[in-house]
Image 1 (spheres, rainbow, N blue to C red):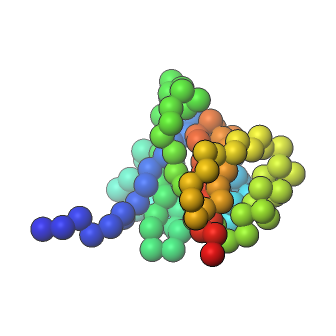
Image 2: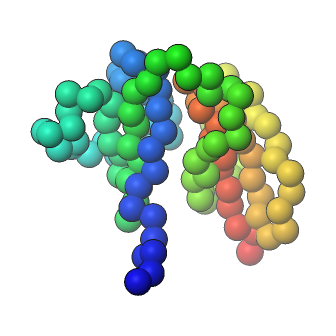
Length: 122
């Protein structure tokens, strides 16, 4: 038996911040929201589709997201575009430790989650 791949990743936002999070993840990052199953809707949050994977955005209270290295890394095209777009939206860009063959940077989403954008250098 083998692990076949990643089905989804879950990150969290403060309880009650779904509308603001949808604005950021769909409006700023351009991800697509998908319908959450009825059996899970009462738990709050929402789901996003990204290629063959999903990002599940759940809700939690009393979490200090600024103290963790946990993060999601989105593979992008045109990393310079993303760096400028996020700067224009007021996000602080944190340059990551170089990894051979990649250009990357990090930022914190409006809820404190660490986010990495990474592009292979061809």
